[in-house]
Length: 343
Image (cartoon, rainbow, N blue to C red):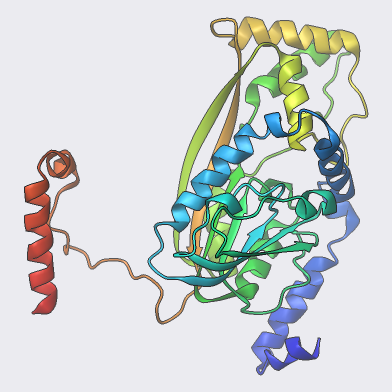
């Protein structure tokens, strides 16, 4: 704590610390997700024999997050993987981008067994902590923050983004991807229609997701600049609805809201499977859509990337295809740009 207070020379900084402390004490009645239940789900999933086979979605998204790190021009001495799980980002990191990567997760079982980096020169450290609070870390500690398919279980997203901003150094980047609204809409609709038919009401079986357009506002409110958002979706085909539910359990992605229904009747599940097939099945496959929102935000600093001046471009977007087909034209444009910069 003494080390933390040394980093807070001004009254404004003290107010920032107070706001963080207040976020930690979020009243129970305002919380949506049962974090203890989520931890138990993750712990259990690792013990299952089919755990590795069900990590395809997280492996794919982990690679996409890592790929964005390769686009950074600066070297990051210390990076943090928030909600690392079994380690879906670390295997792709290389010494040219990162010196040391700290992995943290609320599941002690997962973080202790998380994968390291294929590049032995990248140092890996594992920390067991709740990634919603990030308590072990201090102000302006990291050059780079990463998060892959973990933040959609955070109760206080505004406070979490603020906390991430605090532990990031100036000029540092925060790169992440989370599930967004309308994820698994096929499953949600099928279960709702089946319950209305069988029991005359609707229970809570799928967790709520954030709207993609809200992420930019939350990042900006936390203090991030040069924010970039993009959305995408991954569609996975399953032989039936029960195979989807099975894989969601092994991913540790089952519902954990406080108002979740304790169980689902057998006849409701069978009816939901039939509805799913009738409404959404394609070529005997049950499609499940995972909507993704990816973001990059920068903490302001003197070396932070700056947007190009309006009118400084010398190529129209409609001519991009010509550059790919004609390498000589691309080289000519590059030489022209270098000449202007020297002047």
